[in-house]
Image (cartoon, rainbow, N blue to C red; front, side, top):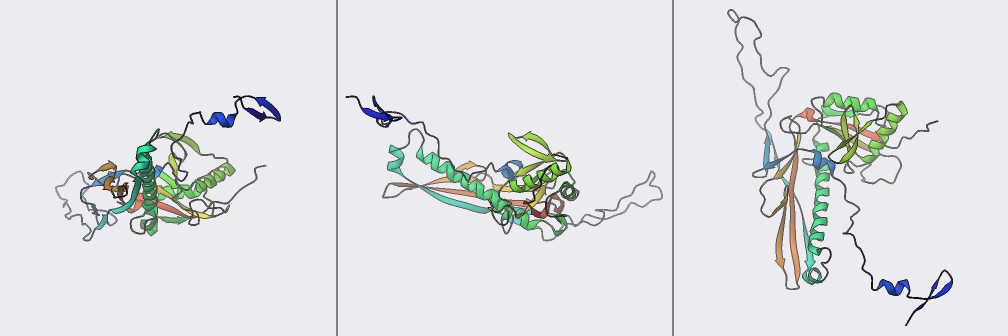
Length: 319
């Protein structure tokens, strides 16, 4: 029997959309988690795997020159200076921190509702991305090994006028002039810097690296992250606010900043991350333990510098 439906004010003797919907297949997306970010820091930072979760940074006690040497065409009447290079007697050790969570999935739900997407895999995938988000935040803000906490006082500079200017960024480069790898800044800080460049008629060049488009300054990419907080927030509502901009040299061979992780984990899923099946309880709930082990080390003081008190709320009228 045909249905009489009303469309645009007219009665139509035809099958209605509401009834037809019950027979139609619906194309669905995977779960969309709006809090996820590209996590560029963990992609650009060089990582080193550890055997036992402990990393010791042995430094040389440096003076104005590391060792006296002889520079002469002839050594007949010259005495070659003697000496040795001193090491720190109490080098710093970094111990990996763990970031963990447990995911529970009802096996009945998994059995019945896993098409077209596997419920366990989707739950684990979102949990892993959440752990990676926390990892990036800890690399920057952790009270023990976080980059902001461990920057030497000599590597901290203030903005000249609040907003991040080309002069401020150049000053950062003087602090990390040995093969700097990338700037790191909140998107609001990057936008503020771009406004300052536009105001001066020197817009930054854009480059494509590892599938992402980044502004550069003096050829150094400016990498965005919302983990460098603005007034303590990832997404500040106020138009103004203060944050920090970092300049980093990464790589062990360059005596730079490196990330640390535990190598060879049991049930290793990806770098420094293990996923363990904990079993099924008497209510049919399957449980999974996710553990991520991470830390970071600054191998030399001049591997990182920070521009502090960066104001992100300066705007201009371009007439």
